[in-house]
Length: 232
Ligand SMILES: Nc1ncnc2c1ncn2[C@@H]1O[C@H](COP(=O)(O)OP(=O)(O)O)[C@@H](O)[C@H]1O
Ligand SMILES: [Mg+2]
Image 1 (tube, helix red, strand yellow):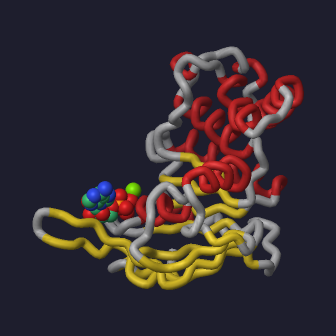
Image 2 (cartoon, helix red, strand yellow; image 1 turned 90 degrees about the horizontal axis):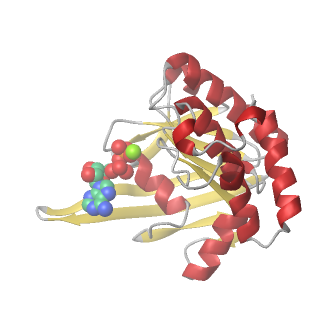
């Protein structure tokens, strides 16, 4: 369990998102309201096509809602311009997807250093931070491996390190263990949970894995465009 404070980190209200298709408008998110506390670990479950990935894309400022508001530590997300959004993502929001999306030409260490270099940190300091984190994740002997030379679980741990190296306040995670066997999935999840606890990062994790959903602070279900409390 996370060390959850009752300080609100993210406040989402009246969030609507639709997609236009040949057969008309698809309403994916319908007046979604919720709050996420600092350091809280939230899981979001729901059927395929329910809009879980859409929700994360919108909260991550990668896609625009039709209407609604979201405040991350008092910062309104949807009024930011593209440059401000990029800066916010670099400083405050980490992403982990089902596929690792590491840069194939860069080794594990370089992949993890990258977000720190982007924000202007000195190379030596970025390298030390990245090494420390990769060591914590049991990857000390994999620093110079390119992604193609890593196992699925190792690559996903590197992706977790890259997402957390900048100490974001929010981590958005979309089916992080979907490509992994159960034992490897548990290992990646545990490592991610522990690191988030240490950093104080709050998490929204979309998952189909009910074993994992049972081990977080709170579970919500996205159903018919609404986020509702879930029994797991
Ligand atoms: N860019 C898009 N254009 C049109 N429809 C989309 C787009 N992205 C997603 N959808 C549709 O929105 C619905 C929700 O998608 P998604 O958020 O990926 O669901 P989930 O992650 O819960 O499986 C799906 O029916 C999907 O086909
Ligand atoms: Mg999805």
